[in-house]
Image (tube, rainbow, N blue to C red; front, side, top):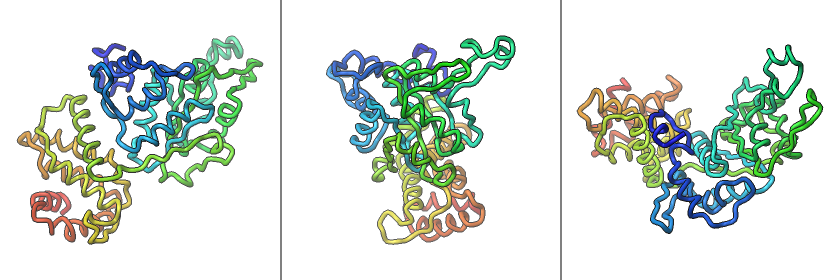
Length: 365
């Protein structure tokens, strides 16, 4: 798909949205590339973390965090070990997975979305039952899974929310990851993985105990834990950039930059998440939700839409208060008490947050 076509899409794939950067990196990349890789490991990390090429092309950062984590993730995919990205919700696991696949394989669409209803066919293969009944088990009747397609083509397959998939279905991966083969007994043969094949899986810490990975399966993965942004400045930068990108993609009317409101939302999320105010003077109760960076981005994007369509075109506290309440208060009893206590004990005591306090109290009731 061309970049022109991509501009009409609500949410282009990474390889579509960043096609020019990927092309510039490929042209400038003279380092060794593993079999079937579109870029060298060095170029993949540059694509993820950003940089400036010798010809002046600016590569925008896709991930803000420790460089070493991305180097470990990329080097894992150059071996025969699969990669498990682990972290709490909102630590950019899916985002990193997509961009790794786009940079390495040129496509991020070989995806299995893990849910409690994910069947073994989603990892192995299924059948076109009309053809199966008419012709019996044949190649034409076989419906390959994204994993099987990746094996045949030497590409990366993505498995999202691995720990939400039932344990017996998870274990269908063991032979694929250890032997790099997928038996198809109905056809009396097997598919052997082409060079370049590997798997990127994601799982979040909050899902521990939902469907734990077996020790046999866990041994097939190298695990990279993605942390929450280390400091407030990093998180403000991430939120500011993603809000601007989403606003452009959604073609929201332009709203002047509101650094103060971005910083307030990030500060609220970080304080409630950690159970401590930024000055380390006041302990706080934490709500039941994750209060992730992704949720902060959603709160601010919603505020921009509200300001653009129903306000005066300037992002104000009144535009974000409602969405912020919804992000914090997941449990109407316990979380509401936590939020009210935070407003009265912390927000109310900050003189320069008076407008924010009034807006939040108005929607909190």
